[in-house]
Image (tube, rainbow, N blue to C red; front, side, top):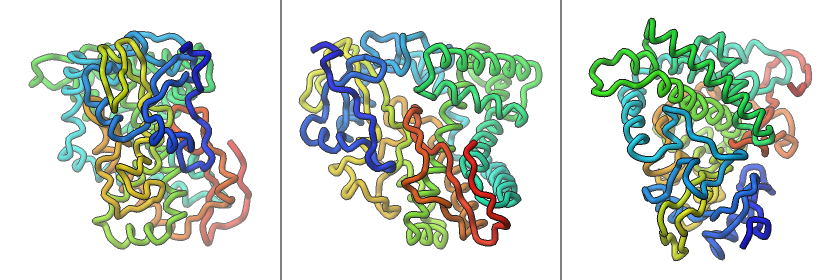
Length: 409
């Protein structure tokens, strides 16, 4: 069957908080089925939770865009830059991930909590100084996520806007390949200059410690540091901003569960896990390519064939999560795949959990009357991005002076 004759990868949502409805049917009838991606690549679409976890732990499925059959997000597959270990296989992936892992160990993340709290407090204070209807994405979610990851990497705050803009240009699937490439070149150029500066005077941040740590048997190269910085920015900025935006709406739609969370601090971890499962902002899926003939869920995947592992579908699989389309912070969903799974599981998952718990508790404790200013069905959602979310989120709260009305940015 040629790519032209294959059905398209489902992308259209009927409900903005649910994946495309085709996934529910496919999980039952054809959990692994052939599709063509928006860029025209034939691929196997994997929709069932059990199969997704099996593939993501199997080394015979490659993460490299150079692997034959790899279904790319962009036109043409190019080598990943040095340090960009998300798109690498062993042994390069293993070596680079090990170098960075210690920065995201739970003990180290705990030491960062006071600084994260201070940054979130700062952004809430800035939000409270605004009047009328404000855009929570522009005025809180994006700057908060940007400042936190910039703090982690040692990016000067005055450069946050530039880095944020170039990151958006890479993740926007409506951009041409040339436009995305230009954004990537400019982002990598920025981090090249930043790493050069830090090599001369390392600071107390991830890049500085990777440069100055003499206990490592193997040093990280300049080019690898540049790629690691870009990877962490791409993974840690927009993802967090969109979970903050969508999560705010979700919690406002479930006031009883929000109240339970605010009353009981022990629910913080469960709330974050359920938000990550329920929302799964990566709605483009994870591309993989088979490097050998492999049978998964009764379906033979041949060497050289590509796959799209659809995390958002796996996280709504009723076999793994009873009543999966319901938001429930009291369910045990620690086996979700919102952070990926296996060899390439999100390296910053512990950091993300801490950041999101701080954000939601601070936001709703400081602004208990926060509400969405328009009907949810009128909110503008981002369907064209690799990461799903909101373009704007107009909000208000009681006692807000004036009624200046929401204006799109």
